[in-house]
Image 1 (cartoon, rainbow, N blue to C red):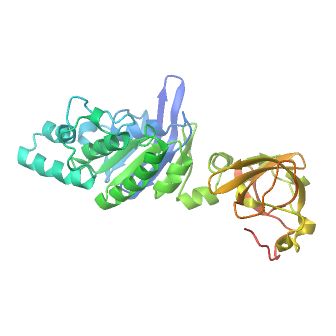
Image 2: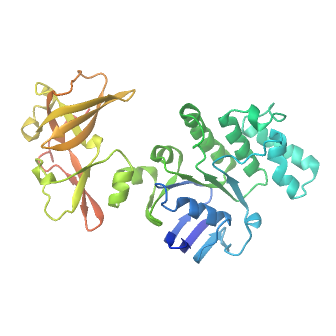
Image 3: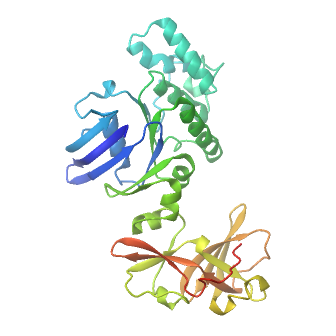
Length: 354
């Protein structure tokens, strides 16, 4: 592992920000630290950077123990949430700042800054000041400045938080492409699950100072291991008394949750579902929300609120309309773990799900 944390603990007074945190990161990977506010993700980032020090545990970078290595000598590039650009310096001067501190010859600084301006799409803007740039451009300057000294690891604290939605979407793809081109091991903090799922190679989910789960975006989304991950990632609806639902046995489980992709609502005259209509629940549409390329439909099924996504190409439905509802799967909780249950009535059936 290129970056490794072993049994890290960190407290601020009575608040324990990190509780026995351990994980490893492969060289060249792009990793998201994902969790809600106060989950400990930024503390982990700051300890990696040397801006905070663990109370116990070990931090390794490229096989070297760095607990007592000063921040400036760890080979870390840091992109702050608010960019932290020097407003009285030009783009060129901001990018060159770290190199000048290291007494790099001016010719080499000029070559490195030119290279980074081209890499980040900022060529021609080197004489501008931060207040003359858009939010996306300022983020690119911060990225270039962090890369200038050629660090071993790049750390980014909520890199897209201060940018509007449209630019944020563009920057996600840009950042992923740039990091792959440079080949630098990168870790970014976010509370936005969509951002983590879209950008990262690996996700580390944190909660209350602990690591809940580590895995690829697909694993985190499709194979949650704890109740927290199940309910934090994805649009998950907790359900009670799910034994009331056809095809599921609730004995031995502590609770459950259902995601929209596990639910299908159809009109009673839809022949595509005639082979499973005997197993469907009766439901009523309680809300319909337009989500751009699909409708989010909320259903009342036996007093439980369930959601499903409906294609805009299908027949329109209205609030109060009676529907038939198929529930394919459920995430059930058992002794702190998550079990994926399939509807027993539908096993072996040819079900058209669209």
